[in-house]
Image (cartoon, rainbow, N blue to C red):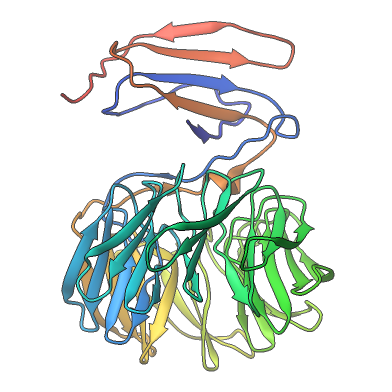
Amino acid sequence: MERYLAAADVRASASIASEFGDLQFLEVYALLTQTRSYPLWDITTGGTIWGIPLVVGDRIYVGACDHHVYCLSLDGREIWRFQTQGPVNIVTAPAYADGIVYATSYDHKVYALDAATGQLQWAFATRDKVCAEPLVREGRVYVGSKDGSFYCLDARTGELRWKVGTRAPISSSAAWWEGRVYVGGWDGLLYCFLPDGRLAWKFPTKDLIAKKIAVGGGVAYAVSRDGSLYAVDALTGQRKWVFRQRDSLPCSAPVLDKDMVFFAATFQQRLFALRTADGSVAWSFPLTNLEYGQPTCEGEMVYMTANDGWVYALDRASGKVRWKYAEPLRADWADGNAIAGGRMYIGSRNCKLVCLSLQGEKIWEFTTSLSEPSSITFEQERISPEGVFTVVQEAAPEQERYRVQTLVEGGSDSVYSFKTEYSSKS
């Protein structure tokens, strides 16, 4: 079952293409304060690279919506590719340790691949989509799943060491500090686990935590859908400070760099630079059409990508633009970029991985196996109390049978049926 949002003033309608048999549509209108809803992202198959590349030595590793993990040379040549059954590392990066690349996929699995050859070492199946970035430390892989569990796996064999169930999906990528693991959940809690799976503490926010956690200097930083960035003592779980935004949502994970923490906010359309000491604003930079994007810090510069088609290079101290770059067709950029060896590597919606110099000059581009872009809807960023649209997919032998049912507070049970020209692939 996948859940999608529908505003209360929108009438039920659907245009569906599927190869798996019957679909039933159940449109449920209820306050989310009474009925919890955990929609994830809706992603179509295509060649888009929404994730963040990983650069290790002279190799680049990146996942794409065409269901592949790619390994490229530093000059953009393909070395190998590995196929999964779903989009790979959506809005996150793969991880690397001891000659192994770890990637997550919407096919519910965590993959371990030989970094040199792409040969599968092991695959571990969860019970639902995995979009969080794997965290690899001390021979263990830590990752959350939409199934509501946080997993610890043996990095060499993929065997389950332990798992902890939460009350909601986990799409937040975990962080490590001083032998502790930090991860956020859609239940609004920031968790701190010991390496053996015991809970050290949990810190409540007022809404879901979907982004990667940042930890440094004894402080854990988490953005919540309640519009706030929280700074929490990493040892005790006590709040140190909170930066609240009025009528806004975080669209990026917090990025910690020395005495500053950076993050972007959707409704305010700004990249914020906050002082880690007290959460005060050092500067903010206005962006256009900001729905997603994540800053990267390198030296005295902050590099920000956004779906307005621009890559921005900002002065770290002042936030002033030093240069900006756009593709000729202004393609949407991926959620973030990687910087290594004086170069920036960034994916795009138009199915390319682009390499730029840190002066904003294009060096090369690599195109994935599919030229048709993927579409992605960040469903968890649009949860509202108006309603939820639930799609239930069934493997039934009958075809051309759909049902829409409206349930409203007060007990309406009207059922409407209609026919369709749809037929499944044989």
